Image (cartoon, rainbow over all chains, first blue to last red; front, side):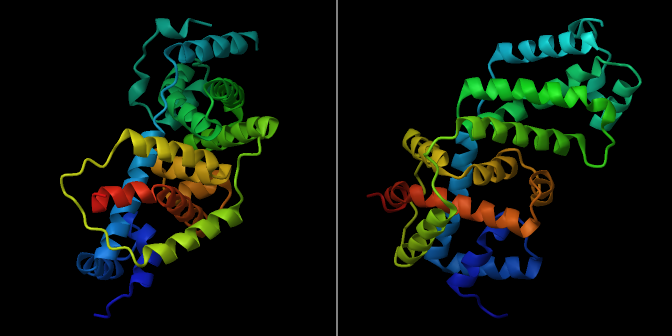
Amino acid sequence: MKSLSCKEVLAHLADFIDGELEAELATQINEHIMKCPFCQQMKKSYEKTIDLFKKASQFDPPEELVEKIRNRLFADLSKE
Amino acid sequence: MPDPKSQSPGYSGLSDSELIERFKKGEKQVLDELLKRYYSRVYRLAYGILRNPQDAEEVIQEVFLRVFQKLDEFKGESSFSSWLYRVAVNTTYMKLRDKKGASMISLNEIGKLIDEQMVKSGSSQWIARPDDELLTEEALKIISDAIEQLPDDFKTVLILRDVEGLSTEEVGKILGLTVPAVKSRLHRARLFLRKKLEDFYKQLFEGG
């Protein structure tokens, strides 16, 4: 099996992490990453960035908001 | 119209399409179930882009009013959630246009930062410390500041894909983008944020 360069691995890293690669290429990338500390860290920090983004984006609406929307909505629709 | 809170006809087991069918037959109470299913998601999207609770509240109210007023005309060519997200994105962008500040950086600037990152990272040899707790307040602060600098359409792609968990295809349909365009924005946005966290990662992996 042909071995990949770091550049090739990085080019496919997003699809690899998102599980959107065909099996053979995914296996090749996985094998490269297992052996390459640089790509290993790239993968780890890339995944951690996604994780941090998710955590930094958890905004809960204020509790009273749904009630406000509901009241406005049903008042509006009642007019029709 | 009956008070939506006074009824509980067990709508939770029905699909969005089934709820809409019932709405078209006159069961207006189904709106409550749709609201319950989606208002947190729409809020997260609007807040994530606008970064302001008051603006997000205004947007979310407008989105649901608009969508529910047009629900009778919904033909089901796309899923209800795609349609709702599309209206939410457009309404949020309209709000942004009203308030546009000068804090955004250009797409070219993002590309430049990413290129620099690739060159610099080539010589880096981080060694992982297994005992590290990766999530810290500091990293969340850095990433929150970095998110504010992302162009709006990059933020939107990231939220829909990474926070809401939609597929690349769904995001493409909502935003009118091809799959490669969605992937490209997603990747560049993630790399941009990663670049901003570079010092944090070095400290984390090298223990410096």
